[in-house]
Each structure stands twice: as structure tokens, then as C-alpha cells.
Image 1 (cartoon, helix red, strand yellow):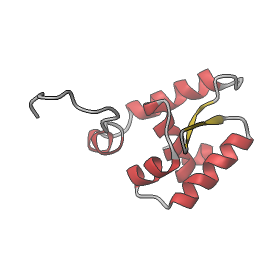
Image 2: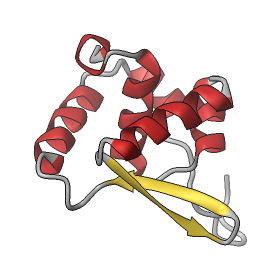
Image 3: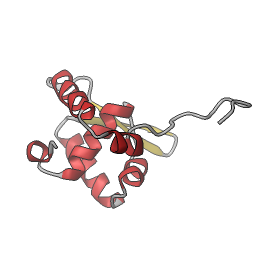
Length: 109
């Protein structure tokens, strides 16, 4: 969908993941899309060098987010959200609706 713009399907998936979940770490992004971990880490490093994403450490895990100080962040986020709206429903449920917090104790499935 945005591969022509981003230059890589992996970059597209990484950016869509960050737009949907607000933050992510390489192993989880790679596992979500079935990608090679080193490919995801390489693309995240390239995006960080370009100032598009920033990272921080949480314990021993490096979390990535879209750079709030990047001049075109709002425009990129709007484009990514628009792209997420066009993702087919089956793909949306598979990739972009994973639980990110624990289920409340005693809540029925």
C-alpha cells in the first residue's frame, strides 16, 4: 500500500505498527508480521538516524515511537492512520488488534 512511498514493505509495516500501537519493540514487531528480527532492527535504526522515530530504554528493552519533534510527524501519522483505515478487516484483526495489556481477573472470555 505505502511501499512505493517508503521504499520497503518492512518500513511500511513498522510505521503502521507504530501508528497503531503508539510504541513497539523490534522483537514484537517482527513476531507480529512474521519478519526477520534483524531486518526490523535495521529499518528502525535507519528511521532513527533519519529522525522519524526515537527510542528509549525500558529496563533492557528498547522501545521505539514516532518522533514527536519531527517536523512532519502529524502529517505522517495522518497518512498512516488513513492507510490503516483501508486495511482489509481480516488483516486488521490479524496484525493491528493484538492485546497490549493483561485481561482483568475473572473477566469471561
